[in-house]
Image (cartoon, rainbow, N blue to C red; front, side, top):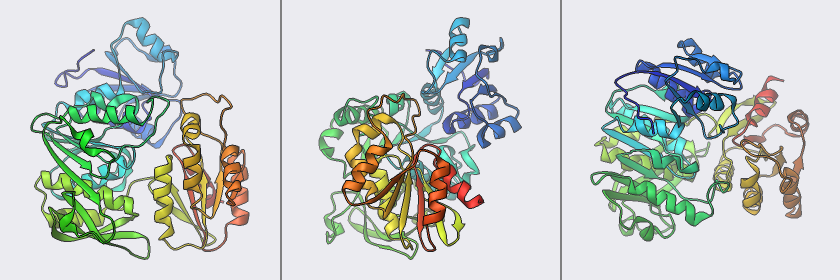
Length: 467
């Protein structure tokens, strides 16, 4: 494997440079003196920002983009050997590595590197912790899997001491990273096009935890099933956090960090009493909705303690954190209908988002869901239907294929049929235009409309607001 000497900048070409993580890494290396070029299939805010910084970005992927001065090619997990640039790089004998390997080598250059992992909640928790560390004037470098207003995008270029990043489990990417601190938020069945089953996923997360050095720190959700078995043989210190059954005395908590007396304001944002080692610390007020964000904030607080952040500092930072892009993001109001967009694309995430939405002002909750990948939809069909049924009215768009090919084994029509059998009001339309027309005719003043999914379903709400 090619090893980058970060003290000797070279020319790196990124295949898929428009991705959130790829664009952030390209930007970060640009500030370190590297020459950067790249390609993507579509123009975006992220690619245009890179162009403004002097990066050459191609919007057609051909072998001709691989100029003779390129020293290394970096590619995303979605790029395969049939990609013309990938094939050209191989033919030229150029060193190549995937995004995860680059991020791993980069993380090893920081004395403190904090990897935030888990099936759900990585971007929000990373955003919370970024806000805390910035409030504490610790000047972290942050690589985020989404955009955040306080960062001015998906990246923050900080000092050379702390690197905060998301550690994704897909294709075992996080096993290439070198964190000194880790967060494990949850472990759920997902990415079953790669993992065999939940035991395979748990095994990978255990391998990730084993990567910690002897003086490393693991912050882990104590509610993860069979936690004791999962933690066997790990190095470093381990702090747990979790939510208690109602009525449990926090002094009897099995977790080091917990929340009690959780309440919600008129917008559905939570506040709670923070307990550490069974003792009351302070009242935490959040500006993001849902009990799942109470849990995420406990993980961020645990790391804040590891980095000696004062209570008042992390309390103020969490109150100021208003979320990241596409995480229950209010897009606007049209004819009294509030339009929100959310990235949820797994049943656990959908359930958390819709449950939180129940606590917000609404007449009816409409959800427009675009399933993401055929394998996930097929494997978790029942779970998707159960989670979506929380909404009053459900509209299904076609499955967003991403990296997959439609085999005909599952479709959005199947989910609609299942929902209707449950007595739910569910619809399917084959085009965004038809969905938009239907919603404009049927959503009324006071309704809450949520566009949901990891694909391009956000465009539906944007289009409605413009009409």
